[in-house]
Length: 316
Length: 111
Image (cartoon, rainbow over all chains, first blue to last red; front, side):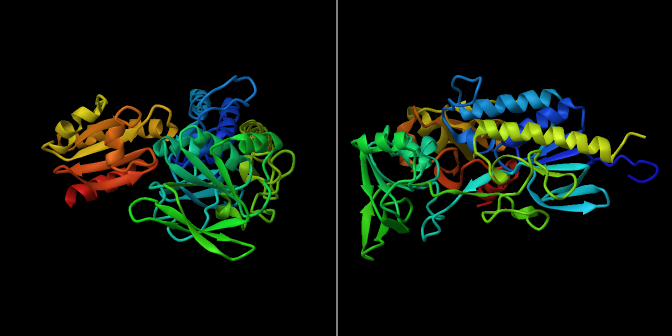
């Protein structure tokens, strides 16, 4: 900073973009390192995992609701001094040695920025899908399946999420039509075995959904069988979509290198090529996409950012 | 300012508390196992304080008051519905920040 060291109200040492487990772990470590740290989250603090009813694979925690796990992370970080604001980050800009973080409601300044903006689920991109979201179209069976008790639903996808959440839905619904565009599943072996054995599952192979049908609520889906091209209507009250994720990195892609899918390339210390800019969690490339790895990334990024600030901005 | 805890309304109470209310009513459809519902709850309490006597705020637990939830086509929670004169005039599905909720409530009040 220049002579006279004017203290700007929105001046921080570390800015964290995204408040899921990666961001919260970064926040905890950065706050404990006594760096003025701000976490910006536009939606639900906790990210994707806050929708999960039961997390059983976070080491050290036998079983916990996703929401409770991230709320604990938040309280822990806040008790060490982490500040959180509800803002949507629109872009980043380097100004001299500092970073300007531009949001929908004001700008911030920081010495280091850590991108922990995670990922969002892919949509099918078919007519009716957006209009009927929340009225039969859902991206979270653990959240919404109870509202389809005794009814028939479609689950679209062929990976772990589709089967795992499909079986979660099967506890409530009368029937699950598992619709997959190929003739074999990507999901892990154990999940496949359980799904094939589940009497409520009916598999619809080599098929895609081309339209979600309904006025006020979903009444069915139009399907196309890919090898033959034949189309038909399937009457269902709900459509649960699990067709992959994309990273929330659009706002800074011009500043960093990414892989084909848009995930940010980093080294083992979560450093990008831009000095003072780090990425951790689902937003970065080669992530194992687990809560524990996101938290691990976040701690690593905080340590690396701390080192960067100490060397780049030595105390006068 | 003390936080007003919105009243929990059952199937049996819904008509009297919501449909026949003298002021507009915001109904927060929620369930204990729903994470985003718990996130939106303190925001709803803040709004209850801010709107004061102009708008009544109540909560409906969809696990218990499932008839009410079904009659309004609740398929995803949290869902917030603004009722005026016994009819839904505004709706928000999913967690949204406070400014979005205020906008929907204000639009519904003006309608």
